[in-house]
Amino acid sequence: MTFVLPSSYNFLPRFYRLASVSMLSNMMIPLAGLVDTAFLGHLADIRHLAGVILGTILFDYLYRVLKFLRSSTNTITAQATGLDQPKEVVLVGLRSGLIGLSLGLLIILLQYPIQKFGFFVLSGSPDIEISGMNYFNGRIWGAPAVLLNFVFFGWFLGREMNGVVLLMSIITNGANVVLDYFMIVKWGWESMGAGLATAFSQYLGLIVGLVAAIFTIQGKVFLDAISELFDWVAIKNNVILKSNILIRFLILISVYSIFTNLSAGMGKIVLSENGLLLQIALFSQFTVQGVGVTTQTLTGNFKSKGNQSQMLPLLITSIISALAIALSFVFVSVVFPEQVFGLLTNHEEISSHITDYTIWLLPVLIITALAFMLEGYFIGLKEGVILRNAVLIAFFIGFVPLAIAAWYFQSNHLLWGTLVSYMAILMVVLAVQVPGTLHQSNNIKDSIVRS
Image 1 (cartoon, helix red, strand yellow):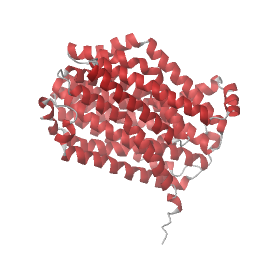
Image 2 (cartoon, rainbow, N blue to C red):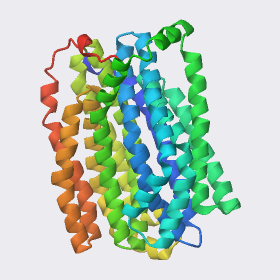
Image 3 (cartoon, rainbow, N blue to C red):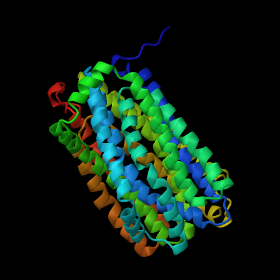
Image 4 (tube, rainbow, N blue to C red):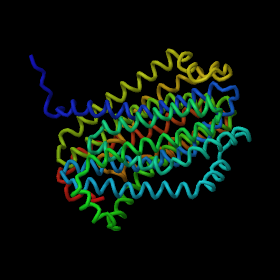
């Protein structure tokens, strides 16, 4: 007997094909971070590990905030692809690339004031801050490549060319691991080496993206797109469209940055413990985001084609898949904490007490998985206002009050509660607005923003 999928779920093979590749490519990012942590965590001086954890806060702002370039490019590309508009697809990539390159060069030009202001705001002892600054000074030179890679990731994912994204990720992160080994272990460059390894590897990934783009764009289509590239009204619309998604990333990274900064204020040990736990949490979240990006891509594609009946089945499928991934990370970390964290550090003063907080991974990872799927759904619909309002409500109501209390009572358990509260409120605010999106008109061609 042959099993036939219901018509509303006939996207499942396509969904899991895209999600599997997207998850693998996303996992490469935190995996390289875990390798960085493992190399630094086994050095005799713990300040290098703590310094890089602290210095990473700045790059959370500079890079992860600017991931709106990937999400917005992905959504617009998916809709243009669904409408079979090849010139618009190329224009999305070119205009987003222009914005990404401009921002990357601006970061390079402003690196000195960014560094001084960033470490003025951050908390940490002088020796930790020196290590963090060395990491910053090495990694900052990769800014243009990082932002252009964000654009390429979103552009290729929107075209459902996930294999290219996977190849870019393998090259980038594989090179990062190799360079980490030489620069940290062999050459003794410590935190500076970790930063330089990350920067150099990003340029290798960018080369792969450029080559793939050259071979997948028709010459005539490219020339037609070039002639319309500097349409400043369209570029302005592109920037406006991205702004609400930018706020989402800014709030999310602010949450994790404040969390890490408050951890630093509670001492070197607490900072290191929370930093290691966050590595596991981010590994899970990056994997889950692979499902979220697929949800975003297919939502945009379904919307452009008017496949309204598949919206809810897509969201349900993504939620179930994300929960399965999050629960697997929770199981391994909670049941085998000594084995997991023993790979990341051999400092007894850290590993002996980290199990007191491991249980927080359960609510954090599960609720985050649900929230991320809902975010991907609304990004795919280009409902930026709904997303912006939801993250602002979650930040000021769910996160800020508990963060103040955690600092006042110097409670690490309460500090972990801030992450749970933020994600829970975000999840609820978005969930209650899903029914309204299921009854929207199918005719969206006139609403597609040319970008």
